[in-house]
Length: 106
Image (cartoon, rainbow, N blue to C red):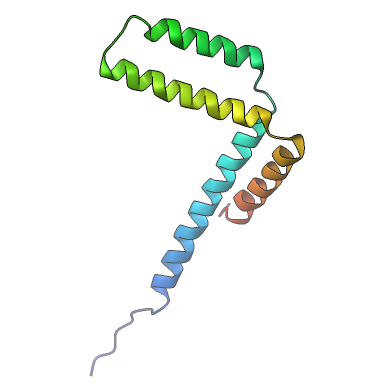
């Protein structure tokens, strides 16, 4: 009977590599969002909302409506990040950094 050189751990290794990659990117996104929360200003949010309203005001196309909704969602997320407590932002940066660097292959 011929014997395969098939490694039974290859599935586990692949799953571990994929999980590590996903956790690394979750850490990166968490770090970036929490850090960005420190720099969002009310004036910037207001300016962006006014610009979006004037830009899409005269356009009734479906694409323009979709882009306007996406921009408003992004501004809502930025406002939410701005209003997070400082301790939460710092913890988010630390946890995100730990996820990022502990799952990085470099």
